Length: 436
Length: 113
Ligand SMILES: Cc1cc2nc3c(=O)[nH]c(=O)nc-3n(C[C@H](O)[C@H](O)[C@H](O)COP(=O)(O)OP(=O)(O)OC[C@H]3O[C@@H](n4cnc5c(N)ncnc54)[C@H](O)[C@@H]3O)c2cc1C
Image (cartoon, rainbow over all chains, first blue to last red; front, top):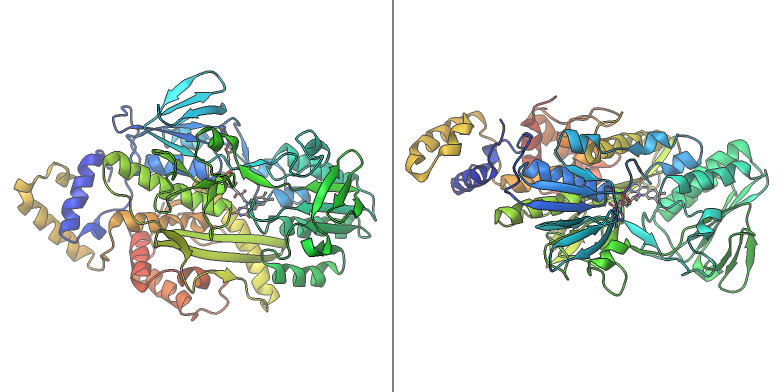
C-alpha cells in the first residue's frame, strides 16, 4: 500500500488509535517519489552512520519532506572493519559505501561539500561552495574531530607520520604501510586516550588484529599499548584471549603504570609518557583525545566539554532549537560512541523530526547497541545494551545487555565472529544501501 | 482497501468501523502499542537483520515469518531457554513481553522481498 499523503494518514492513525486499532496498520509507508516539498526542508550534515541513516528514515517517514544531505566525500569508508584492512584481511574498497541508493531510491538530494557555518537563529547553513541553504530542521552527525596539540607535538601534520587511523580511508592505509614496512622484532606502539572517545573497544580490537598480522608475518614483534586510563572495554575478555592466542606479544600499560603519552616526536617515531619514559616505535599509532566535529561548535550546540548535550527523547540540541544532533558528537552515555548507536540515534531523531514537522509529538525512543570486536577473524566477542529514557535520562534497561560469556566455547567465539560480519553487512545496507 | 480511509471523515465513520472490524478479524493478535512507536522500536533490529528485517546472511532475515514463531523465539531468548545463544538473550531482556509481541507482529506483517 502506498502512503500517498502523510497528513491524511496521520489523522487516519489518530482516528484508528482512538479506536485502539493502530496496530492493524501496515507500519511502513512504501516509498513514493516526491516532487513537491510542502512538508518542510531538512538539511542533514554528515553522511556517516548517523547522518545517512537519518536522511533515509526521514524520507521513509514522510517522502514529502525535502531532505538535503551535505557530505564532502563521495565514498564513505567505515571505521568498523577498518582494523581488518589494517591487518591485511580486507581491502579498503570493501569498506567503502556511496550515496546512490539514498539519491535514487529515497530521493535524498546529496551535495558533496563541507558545511562551514550555521546560523541557528536564521536557520541557514553556509557551504564551502559559498552556497547558503535554509532549513526548517537541521540534523548534524559530524562525528569527531581530533584535539590537535592536546598531546605535545601531535598535530595534523604529525598525523601523516604517526597516523591515528581513527577516521578510515587514507589514514588506515598510512598505518598499514608502517606495519608492512616494520621489521620482524619491531614494536608497534599505540597511544589510547581517556574516555570519552570514539569506539571504546576499538583500540583493543586493533591491537588484536595487528597481533594477528604480526603473528603470521613478523612473529618476533611486540605490541605496546600506552593507555590514559586504568581499565577498558571488554578488558577481561580481551586480556584472556590475548594470552590464549598471542602469548605475551601484547603488553598493555594503564595510566597508573605510566601509560599516558604526553609528547610525540612523529619524525623519530618516539613518544614520552607522563613520568618521563621514552618509547621508540617501529610503527606508531597515536589515537588522540577527541571532540565533536567543528561544525557543532559553529552551530553553538557544544558545551564546555566539547561534546553536544541533547534532549534524550528526540536528540534535539539542548541549546539551539530545531537543530538535532546524533552520533559520536553527542553526550549520550550510557550509549557508547559507536556506529550502531549513531544509526539508532539517527532513527530516533528522524522520527522526532517527521513528527515535529507534522505538528505531532515524537514517539517514545528506543535504542539498542551491539559492538562486536574481533580478536582474530574467527574469534568474536561483543558487548550489547538496550536503552530507554527514564526521568529525562538515558538508561540501560535493567537486566539487558552485557558482555559475551567469559567461559564461552570456541564455537560460540566463532559464531560471534560470523555474526560480526553479518552485522557489518546489515548495518551498512541499512545506512547506505545494498552492496554485498 | 485501506486507501479508502484516506478520504474518510467523521461523517463516514460507519464505513471506517466496518472496514476496521474486518481487518481485526484477520489480525486479532495486534498489540496495543502505538504503531509509530513499534515502528521506531523495530528499526534497531535492522542493524543486524537489515532494513525491515529483510537481509538474509550470517544473521537470518526475520521479515514475513509467522508472528507466533517470532514471538516464541524472542521469549525463549529472553528466558535463556535457547541454548548456544550469543547476543539475542542479552537484547531480548531489554524489552517487555508486550513489546516483544509487538515486534513479532510487526515483522510478521512485513512482506518478505
Ligand atoms: C577502528 C574503529 C573501529 C570501529 N568499530 C566499530 C564497530 O565495530 N561497531 C560500531 O558500531 N562502531 C565502530 N566504530 C565507531 C564508529 O565508527 C563511529 O561511532 C561512527 O562512525 C559514528 O557515526 P557518526 O555519524 O557520529 O560519525 P561518522 O560516521 O564519522 O560520520 C561523520 C560524517 O560527517 C562528515 N562531516 C563532518 N563534518 C562535516 C561538515 N562540516 N560538513 C559536511 N560533512 C561533515 C564526515 O565527512 C563524515 O562522513 C569504530 C571506530 C573505529 C575508529
